[in-house]
Image (cartoon, rainbow, N blue to C red; front, side):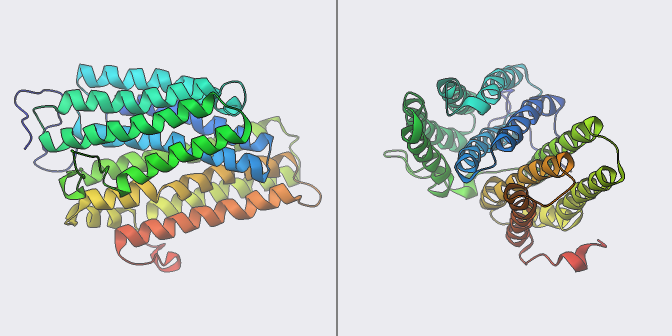
Amino acid sequence: MENYGSKPDLRRPTTGGHHKVAMVELFFDLVFVFAITQLAHALLADVSIANAVKIGLLLLAVWWAWIYTSWVTNWLDPEKIPVRVMLFGLMISGLFMSAAIPRAFSDRGLAFALAFVAIQVGRSLFACWALHHHSEGNFRNFARITIWLGVSGLFWICGALLDGNARLMLWVMALAIEYAGPAAGFWTPHLGRSSTADWNVEPAHMAERCGLFVIIALGESILVSGATFASAEWKATTILAFMTVIVGTIAMWWIYFNIGAEEAVERFSSSDDPGGMARLGYTYLHLPIIAGIVIVAVSDELVLAHPYGPTDAKTAATLIGGPILFIFGNLLFKRATAGRWAQFGLDVGR
């Protein structure tokens, strides 16, 4: 049972519509523009299977830091001073985390791990403080989450103190703990398990937040393409390549936002278990969508940098793999939120 009268940090229930995304939430998201840029450039610097695994792991961490914050601001009012201060603290840690990404598997591993753990554990501790005595169900939920993140944090930090494959394996274990948490209901001895029925998430706010992250990733694609094209020699082939990548970016926007987006929100809002749908559709199934956009951004720069001659293996891999991953993620997301497989050709006119 929520007690709104004595705790000003909690969001008040809406009588109609939904809570709009606050300006401070958009300000917070700017850190993740930087993070996505760092991930794309780190992959572009070495398009290999080994580096793709490492960048994939870092992308999982970046997404997890962002989506957990979106869950928290679903319950806590970002217009209130304490919540704003918390978000600003996360922004500072997020900037350190993002700056460390290119060298996270070399000399800045500890900086990345400490910043990431500070985001995860610090946010959860703040949520426990804000929700204590005012939303007992969510307080117990975040108490469980804090314990899970504390355990995974040990693996992050220990991994950062090691090198090579040892660091990679410990960080894989850390991510496995974090990603298993929601699916396991954050089961904890003496505290039990969280139920998605208790996660009174506001559907439209969550959908809008995730849509904004997709915009962030698409924006990175446009920035990369525009910067590369601006420095290139403007010949017919280069201009054609530029037009191709821009049309591809527009197509990705169309697939995500125009095809079934409103239907997904409506089904989400009427669901008997909106917390469960948010966990599956918006927490887990957005990952391949974001990963696909990042890989497409890399392929765009490779194409614009070398529009002539035969296509090498790394360019072909990103050209094919990025769109496949993006479309696959959208198919899964539409299936989870619309209750059917998306029929892209039939839905374009909606």
